[in-house]
Image (cartoon, rainbow, N blue to C red; front, top):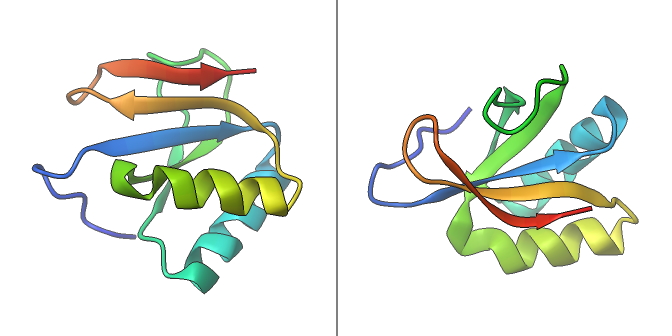
Length: 91
């Protein structure tokens, strides 16, 4: 778990299965990317599931890392406040 800093915007990536979330978490740890596995926020989807939150400054690295591991992104969001999210991309 990492403490998100209020001055550093965070992004949330939604993947297609918990298997991919766990695989992504392992890759993030290996690459030293700060992250936290969180429940998918209700503001994004009513589906149950898990997502990965990380600093937005790492978005390019995260996108490349997931692509190189053949992990497709279901949705990518920027957190704009506690319960507000802006869509960056969606499949």
